[in-house]
Image (cartoon, rainbow, N blue to C red; front, top):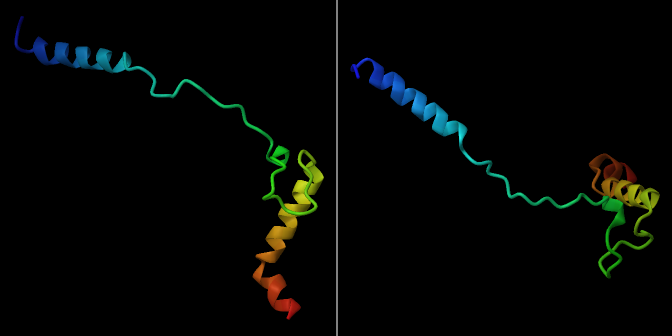
Length: 76
């Protein structure tokens, strides 16, 4: 082999080795669950019903209004 072919051959071998890399995923995926379908344990907001999307949206709206500085300062 000539010395000019050696770097080219080495580059081809390295490129082919990079193509053989295994995917780095965990392989298992959990199915997404609708957030409004949450649990009905003791740590839920009053008035929220599990699986009811309308009550979920109402609870999120009520929570965000409590954190809105404009709504809190105008009420005083």
